[in-house]
Length: 234
Picture 1 (cartoon, one colour):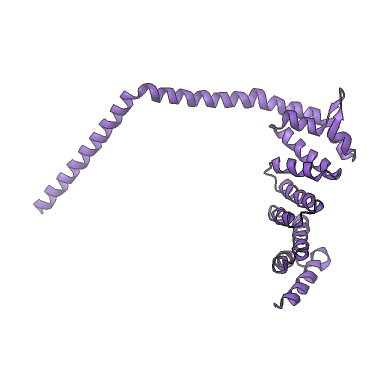
Picture 2 (cartoon, one colour):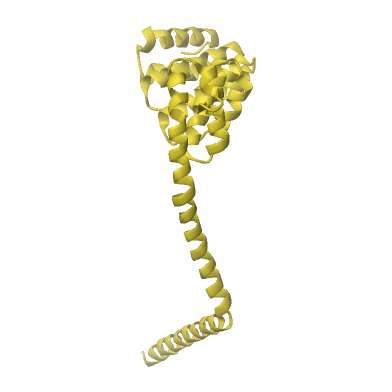
């Protein structure tokens, strides 16, 4: 028993000595590099303050300015005067594209980007619509679904049907809103069928059948049954 106690005391003493040495090494490192450590801390504080100041005194005022400038463009957009909403009127009001160019890094500028993309889409300029939609960022599930859905539509209209397919799937997966989910899974299923991907098409229609039975007058059930017959599955 005495031997065991001696071993335990020796191990404890060694552990304490290691802790002391580690503490000493840390103190020595801090003393030798005090200026560098202080410099790094000061730089971090300055960067944080700089970011706060930039956000508070540059980004936020610009966002408010962009919102103010968007009023007339939004009104025209809602009235389906999309060309005017997009281009604006020199000396009178800014168009959506100009707001994107000038305030694109603000929340309002980001919203203008989505509406400008919608305008380009309605005007048949699908390449410009795709470019802006790819740059548009949102955490809102409905707008995210609409973004992917519009990307899919723009690519479909550009005869890039297979490229469009994954965007319709992303659109459906982005939201829990029944109408949007059914719409985008249906489009995904129809496109998959058109390019010969029947198994994939069945998967999308089956999701609708399982999650929203009878939706859209039971169209998903009809497609699913037809595909199961074609594929020879139950």
